[in-house]
Image (tube, rainbow, N blue to C red):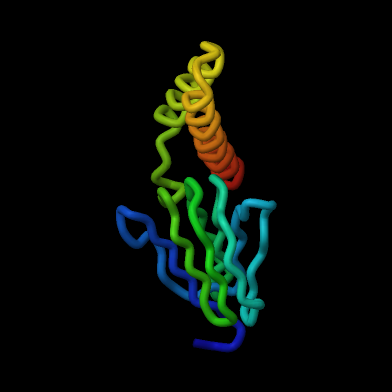
Length: 141
């Protein structure tokens, strides 16, 4: 491992999504987006639903979606333990739109607090997926 890279592991219950070296990683921490470079100070924090962007040593960028989880940063390693994770190119726009519609319907129904909380979480996950899909569409176009 070179001094100008950091090892990144992105895993979820379904399995490993990414393992490799990076020059920089951007993640949706619970208090806002953070950037992680090699030799970053150790940190443990929660992740919210959103985009993880990995800049590889060759200058390319890879995009991933995480539905929340935990992040551990060590000077030479970043570990993302995601509730759910997927490569951005594998996201299903129709499913995300359907999830958003279900969540909005549940919120409009003024149901009990637990259902409201679940609907808000579902809405946040769907919005994060749709935002990432739109970002990829703009990068390609």
